[in-house]
Image 1 (cartoon, helix red, strand yellow):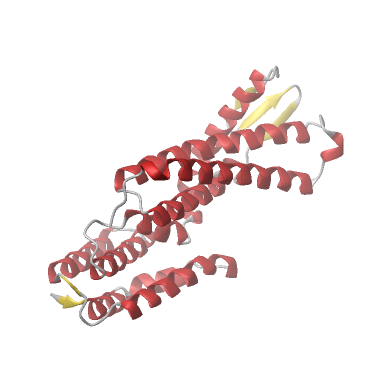
Image 2 (cartoon, one colour; image 1 turned 60 degrees about the vertical axis):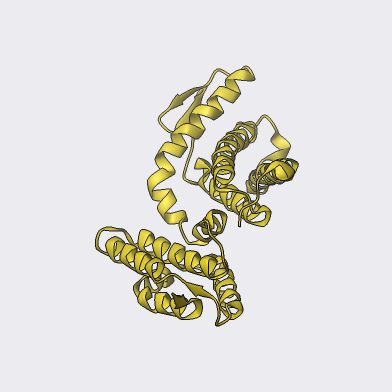
Length: 261
């Protein structure tokens, strides 16, 4: 057994390359805020780890080996993610936790600067999916529209779904909110996984609803609500409604959810 404090310091030093990569991906000040919150949380946890708190040496060895493996074959964000998960697991074990802190890990991973990676891997399929769902909603309202690639064609107009219209940022924010609510509610792993899946589905449909609403603005059906201000207002309103739905749904089921250590 190893003192938990020493184990955390050892891992923090061993993962120096991950922290170097993380700093290089923070970007602007807004992206640094979640990282600072994580650092404060780790600092508070480390202070509260008294000297009698110990963790198995085999756990430290496993997470170190995992980092070495991803350092050889993994990408930068995978290295950063493994380093974060490893320290979270050791801290959690130091406080006596038995099961992996899935919700806490989810919060940590969502707080990382992962949006550029999500944009790279998911932008195109998300744009296509959003265009298809939006076209379906508009057809239900009687509009003769069809999808052309990542755009909606209506009469002589072609409405393109660009990167921001893909809904990736809404998806990321919704998953982060769900992870925070799951951490607060201390729900089990299976419930947390189900909550993430449901959240992803709701976020995708919420983005389609947002895009369908913007159709009326972009095509001039609501002439008094033209311009970028109303465009942003529709986006904010869609996310607020999604957030309220997630919070309501979570706390509605909270009493039925099994708690985990």
